[in-house]
Image (cartoon, rainbow, N blue to C red; front, side, top):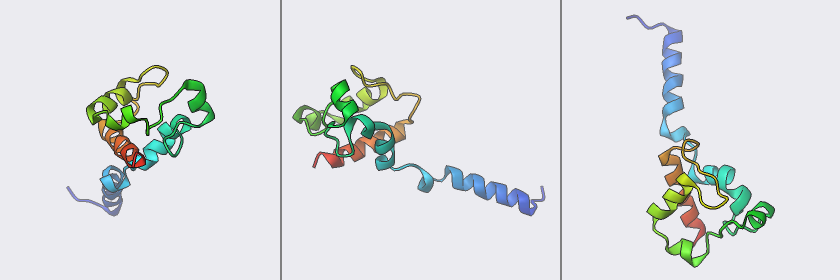
Length: 105
C-alpha cells in the first residue's frame, strides 16, 4: 500500500492522540472532577463540600486508608459522592489518587 502525505499526517495525528504524553495528569483530573467538592487543597472547605459533607483528604482515617480502599470509593462512590466508574479510566483514577496523596503531605 502506498502512503500519500494525507495518510501519513492522519497516522501521525492518531499516534499523538493516544500517546501517554497527552494524557491528563492526576492534578488535572483532580481539579476537574474532585476539587469542586474537596477543594484544590483537599480540605473540603468549598460550599459544595460543606453542603455535601465531603471528606477532607487530611482526615487521619483517609490518610491511613489503603489505596485499594480509596480506589474502590472513587470507582463506586460513597454517601453523596458519585461513582466515577465509566467516567474515568482505571489509570485516570489511579493518577487522581496519586495526586490526592501529594495533598496529604
